[in-house]
Length: 154
Image (tube, rainbow, N blue to C red; front, side, top):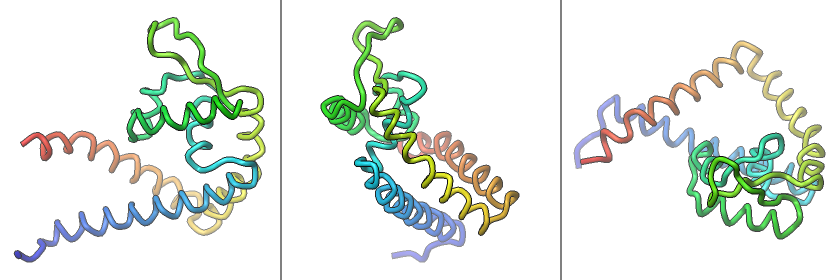
């Protein structure tokens, strides 16, 4: 086994940091969502369609997860009366998912906990640090999207 280069170590640290951060977000989001009878995954999908009805495939692309995962959650939300399918004028077969009034209410009830977490992060990071964190994560996501095909299409 060859030793990792400094660049490889940076990639490893970045990936492990993002994996850890994702776990932290899921844990905190699950705890917040549980208070209103949701899971983090349900909140994620409901939040995506609360204001704008959206096809399942578009939700999956935006979130970087499989269409099948979003479809499973969407079907559960519909079964619970928190979301519903609607005709899509742009595509006959790809229905739109939209929040029902009960789904929108659940998302609204999460707002105080969401605001509290945002305020806590702002207090620790500062406004400039928080904004820079967002910029770096968005940029990393853009770059990963552009280079991932070059290393996986071999």
